Amino acid sequence: MTFGRRPLVRLALPALVAACSSPEPVLYSIPMKPGPVLTGGPGVVLLHDIGLAGYLDRKEIVRSSEAYRLGVMSNDWWGESLATMLSRVLVLGLSQRLPASRIYAEGGAISADPNAVLAVNIQRLDLDSSGELELLAQAAVEFNRPTRSAARSFHIVKHPPTSNVAGQVAAISDAVAELTDGLASLLTS
Image (cartoon, rainbow, N blue to C red):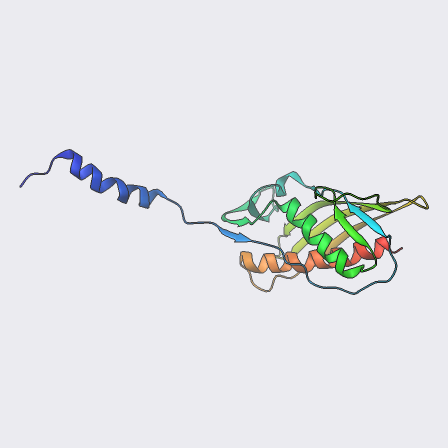
């Protein structure tokens, strides 16, 4: 019995495609953890789009930026743009912490005349050489009625509960919650 080339190619092609395909990526999200409820604060707060360090602006999760190398996880991705996710999570967290304030994201569908405009730059959000999660951020608030401003830098270090990507994301969630606590305090100062 002889086989022609075409039947063999038809049989081999699906096996070749299956062997060359990569596994589906694992998608991660940052949940907001509740924090202390504060009194006061501006009636309406506009959160500017998050300023994100360029190396973090990718779908893959950055494990580390230590030793002049960028450690990126090829199959561990953010479920949405990191800047968009951080903005969404900060709006949720600030809304919980400042119930007398209405918090809106700049990129959202709702616009209002703000009493305060909050800007946040995330400069680092990855593991350091010892495996600790490090968040470096700057925040500034411009208040209207009366006009004044406030600014603060944040350096937050969290220990991941596990050494894998899920542990890193858990530590990121803790760090973002602590950042949100600080932003809420800044808005009530």
